[in-house]
Image 1 (cartoon, one colour):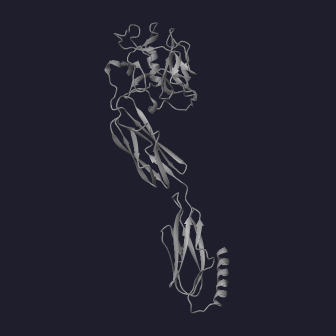
Image 2: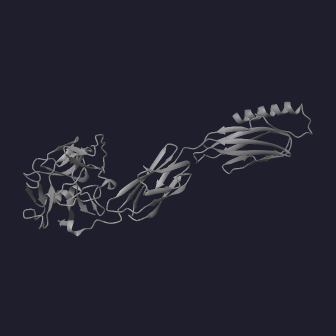
Image 3: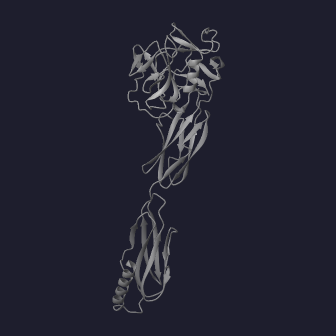
Length: 394
């Protein structure tokens, strides 16, 4: 009905105009005189009314916009209907509609607003070899995007190109050789109009720590005979407790002359997850044990010794010595760090990688003291505290 009123108005206007013009002189007039207009990003139909007294043709310079009818003749008012497809891109786009009547021409500029931004990347996790290598991240987008490597001043081993693009594209990730046994990681962040996606780049060391002298197999599980020291390194001796780690964090803490070094992280935030591989402090080829694995060790045999404070675990725990450990490993007992203080200096506290199934504040642990491997201590403990780490072979 609205279109009929519009056509009636056009015809009346045309009749008034014709009475004032020579019938022999060609004319082409847009009734609203609007030669540029903006439309929404959604698919829609619009219309334009014009007066003409000769044959005419309408064309569009893009495929996502069409006009109907696209030609006509006579001395009358005409309506063309403009069909616009939804804009799949998060960028403004323009169509030029041209009405040609003999030597006369009218150009109408249609500006369509941007569609909603969309962004995805694949893969979202790259496990890189320790050698120099190249990897690819596929970007699927309908907008302008930028990409950065987190903390580029430090992570110079990982670079990307290009750093920006529009629409679909590929980011090339180049990694340098990783000397040593420690894993390292970087994050490639891709951002488009408020939409943020992250790709984790985890690189192993170029060597796997495979010294057979520290590997002890107990009930089918191969344990390291030493604790973790700095990230990606074992201690030099089995009686050395090494570093303390908070759950799912890569920083190793030491207790030196009555203080914690480095400054203890007090703003810890819990996540409901197991310990992530990228933050696992064990050297390459090793990992944190699961709750089941550490429980298997606890049940395999136990013997406390006072000097140095700690316990032997394993089938040969009762007879094990440093020179002849047999099927047993020694776990030093040097307490834990809680709120920047050492607690239970002659108790052993060791992480598993396993999140508590009932409370995201807790993790399954192995606690022990001189009275036994499972006397009165809880089998779960709070994540913000820092405990010692013993690894199993991958």
